[in-house]
Amino acid sequence: MYYTYILKSIEYNKFYIGSTEDLRERLNNHNSGKSKFTKAYIPWKLVYYEAHLNRTLARKAEIFYKTGQGRRQIKRKLGL
View 1 (tube, rainbow, N blue to C red):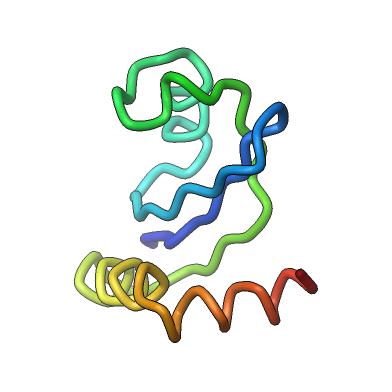
View 2 (cartoon, rainbow, N blue to C red):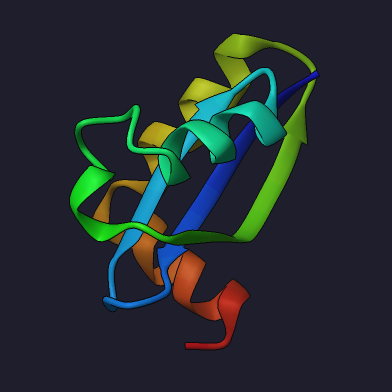
């Protein structure tokens, strides 16, 4: 199983969109500073995720959520 996920920085109003095979490990990596893109905004909390059957589908969803239309859909899903 592969996941597309959205993190929100607890201290800053920043979101991060990614995909992974191991969601728990990836969240731990973000919060321990192992990801250079999210290191400056620690701590992160998981606010949304969806499961996919393969890596390709998870990556396609990640790319979509990073578009303008995808960000609007995220705001609707999260009630923002």
